[in-house]
Image 1 (cartoon, rainbow, N blue to C red):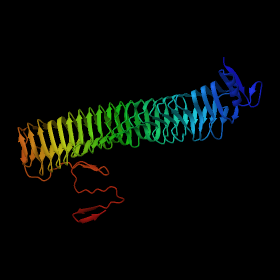
Image 2 (cartoon, rainbow, N blue to C red):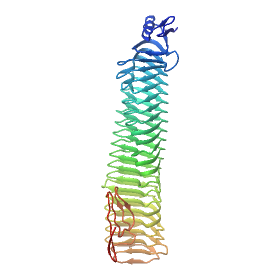
Image 3 (tube, rainbow, N blue to C red):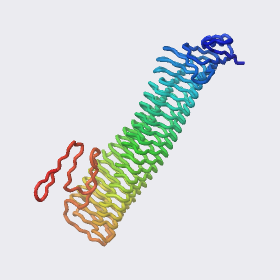
Image 4 (cartoon, one colour):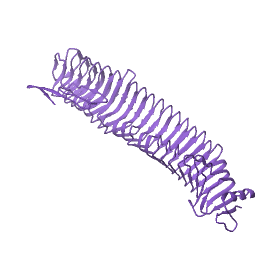
Length: 568
């Protein structure tokens, strides 16, 4: 049977004047106790032992227990606190020494200290409560947090460390100076929560932690919405991150699984995987990323499946020795490249669809910079594929429709094309310039307003079993010191010439009714000049008599006319 005790500073029949005296009486009897506390402010330390329930007699918020310094409540046994406001400063406000502690419909005001402390071997539950201006700390303990609010923590709002196991559900965490929830060498699940205005990552997993996140909303974060580092694992499902610097990030060997998430208006990156981290991202949407929607860098290796990237600057960037694999991803309406592989990165893209992006794929770097595209479609672009530096690009079953240039290779890069099609381009189907090399089999170019193939500089083309139809200028054109060979190819239509060449191209079994013209030319009309300058303009098409300036406060242009120089 539970013994009942009443606390009232105003006195009364069998009432205790303070809470401590009621606790001493309950401890002396050694039975389960219910202590009902009248409204008021109590400046005392509560040492609660045994099976005890502390209740605010007239409802939550009517009883305030506080001290200027030191702990306010220490529990040992099976202790429940209902409706009390505990106020402390620069110390542990409510701690569980041994056993279990439950805070129900209560408030904890820590003022820079630890609001709630659950040390090793204890179990602490917070339900329908508020923890303000302090952190909740689970160390090697078990915890349950339901429908609570954590506000303005001077540190991490909730820290789960050293093997602790904690579940946080249906709660709101706002204004944390560091993290909303930090999990370090421990396990935690965060379900159905709102997190906002964190100074660093809203959710952080480090030191081989395991973090499970589901159905959460994260907004206005100064760093990452969710961050996995130091070989941490876990999953993120059906969660929304808005207005963070990075949506979801993984680093230093972490490997999360992310499904069904929406990452919107992230200022830098939506998905960021680096420093030997991995990660699998499925059925996600990255919308309006300020810099790169999906970034793999410094050895990161994400796998992205069945996702949508829309709006923003660059879609996917793989750089600095990273590896990225994209499968069945849609990329739409970007102001820059849909796919970018740079500086030793390796990109594998399968079943990708790219619509209305300035550039489809661009690569630049050393010989270890590679991109492999299979069953990829580019629509409404300026250049579908551009390979520069000494990078290597392989296309299989790639389609490019409605643009300026289909496939381009320059500098010392190499482009290999199999079973691919370019349709309705205004300049050229495939272009080799500089010292670039193009190797193509079963390439089809339909409806180019310029050429089917164009080689200039020292570019080289080896093209076989290919077909060029209705190319307004020429099926193939070779200028400068470029060369190559066409084997078992066909040029169809009624416009232009079959081949315009410089004597450095070998024609084997060419099928055409159009003329083949040999002449020495230094340049070929409509041969595209492709300039990739990430701080300046991106230009496709022949450029004549133009001036460009960027990163200048003022620009002065001089144009020569028949009457002499004019100044603007």
